Image (cartoon, rainbow, N blue to C red; front, side):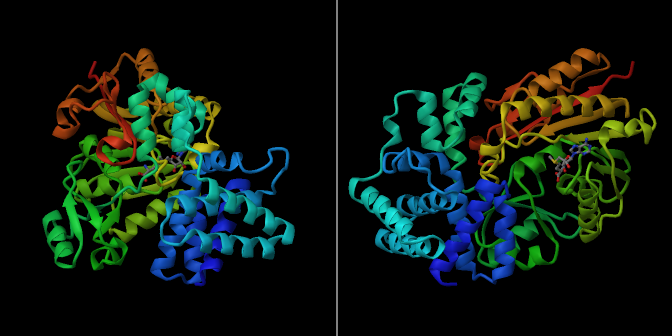
Length: 450
Ligand SMILES: C[S@@+](CC[C@H](N)C(=O)[O-])C[C@H]1O[C@@H](n2cnc3c(N)ncnc32)[C@H](O)[C@@H]1O
């Protein structure tokens, strides 16, 4: 695809994400499927869109000194300038003069000569005078916010909860690419067989210490490997794999997966049970519950029954003390997955976190009576926030003396995670920078027999 068409496509996606609340990963997937892009163009489009969204606050800061603040720029002009500045500052694939030329051409087509001349003037003057340096900002919250493009309310909140060092490290890693990891289908081949096969086919891979089924892909497009195409591998972050590992399921058990879609962990549970036993999977949305069924069929895992339900009402569907294990992988603010879903950081608010923590507690309350005595309940979220994690558990335990933190959880963690900074008496907060994974919280509760 011609480069200016590719930039126009990137701009369309950015405008929809920025102004209409669309999701970048879905819009990129849609463009890739519909425009028949080459592999090179796919990666450039993804880089331009993700990079511009990831760095939006920094780009706004760069621009602020070069446009008259009283002038209101149309959203598309603003996004075009962000996109152009992102390429000039962070990508070295195209020289600045070519970026400026293409941006001017795009503005002529979308607007008129006046806008083209404004775009030209702003970009040339930044090129001449250089980019402002956010490292010079003296207020630490504002500096981290602008340097790493995270909203200042979030920086303040994280500094209060985890301190400046962790906050800064987390924000920095959120600007980088996360290595892809995959889970091997153990009923089809062993992890070593998969590694050997991939290495023989030119991939650079290594075993994950989070799960005996996990492989980290350092180099190579895994989507093109025959193992992936034939359903031997499932793409999944290592921290998600750890959640299922820590549920400690066994063959023949009866399991509840209360928030299951799209089914990454449900299918992992079924694999760990060698497809022997019963898994009742639920999701609030019917469409999503069907995704779990589809995934189970693809992986030939017959013990999964997936249905739509609000898991806050499961007591009307199941008798008390039915399940050996319960997984509550709760809906959350998603602040641990900002690398793959950068839009989240601009859309979420403290009010959302408050509401989500109430739902999380309601979900825990509702499923708690369904666990057998001596059973185990694993609570997890893909977020980094004490109110959705430690505080939810603390509050739940205050009201439920029949439950306690399962101390064996800590002993059973992989060696490398036993002394991490996020370990507390309420569970384990995995920060994304610690092991280059998603940020996740997980803890295991056990129900006492009396
Ligand atoms: C973090 S995602 C689960 C991811 C899933 N466990 C996996 O590994 O693929 C949370 C899910 O909870 C679902 N959900 C939200 N509220 C719910 C409720 N009240 N009852 C059941 N599911 C709910 C959402 O639709 C979403 O699919």
